[in-house]
Structures are given as structure tokens and as C-alpha cells.
Amino acid sequence: MLNKAKTISTAEKLQRLDEEIRRVHGRMFRWANRLDALIKARTRLVRIDEAAKAVIGERFAKENEKRKQASQAETDHLSEKQFMEFVERGAAAQAAVANARINDDPLDIRNTAFRRSEADDEAKADIIAAQQAKAKAKAKASSEKSRAKKRGELRKMPLQGKAALAAIRDAK
Image 1 (tube, rainbow, N blue to C red):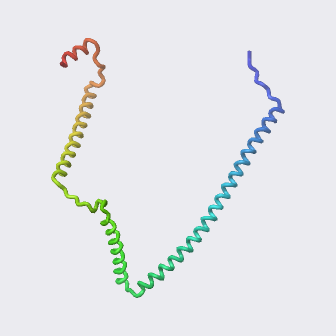
Image 2 (image 1 turned 90 degrees about the vertical axis):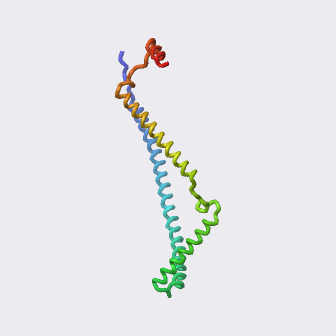
Image 3 (image 1 turned 45 degrees about the vertical axis):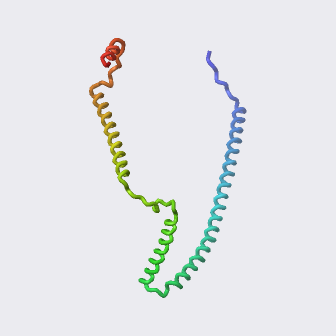
């Protein structure tokens, strides 16, 4: 007995198409509204960013103007060589302040007196010897395994029954 395909009337097809159109329209309008919201958010952020840059730019301009006036007052009367000496003295003073901060810290490693002793050298030699011994053992095990592969020992099945008992007796 053959199953006949159910025939759908034109009215039912039209109803299904109308439902699909309504669903697609709903999705389309939701996406369009979401797109509008994203565009508005982007333009708002751009405007805020531009306004912030303008304010910050004004502040930097004022600060730079103050710096220029202060530096001109101190260095206008100096020659190039004198100016370089002035800059080097300032850098040296800053380095001295930083070093003083470091030297005041009792927990700073640079302030601890570290002297090498014979015990340190012996410990270092022991560590190196242990590392070399471990490397040698690893290399020996690897070479033994590769030799066993070549001889075919790794492909052999384990002994069973009387042969296993004989091997155990011979091993003792």
C-alpha cells in the first residue's frame, strides 16, 4: 500500500506564507531597531570622545605654555654646552634621589651583603653532578630501549605457563 502525500490547499499555503512573512517582518524590524540603537550609541561616543579630546588638548596646551615659559626663564641665558651640563646635572640629581630611595629599603636585594662561600660552590657542583647523572641515566635507558626494538624484544609475547615458571626458576 502506497502512502499518498497529503495535498495542501491553496488557502492553507497562503496562510502559512502569511505567518512566515509576519515572523520575518518582526525579526527585520527588531534588527533594524537594534541597528539604529547601535548607530546612535556610536555617534554619542564619538561626540563625547571629541569633546574630551578638546578639553584635554586645552589643558595640555596651557601646561605646555607654562613649561615653555619656565624653561625659557631658566635656560635662555645659557649656551648649548652650559645647557647640556644643566640637563646632565638634573638627570644625576634624579638618579641620586632614586638610588637613595632604593638604598633606604632594607628589604631590597641590592642592599644585602652577598658573599660566595665554599659551601655555595660545593652545592653548585653537587647540583650539576646530579643533573648530569640524571641525563646519563635517561640517555642509557633510551638507547637500551632502541636496541631492544631493533632486536625485536619489545614485540615478543610474554611467557605463559610452563615456560614462565621455568624462566622464574632460572631467574632465582
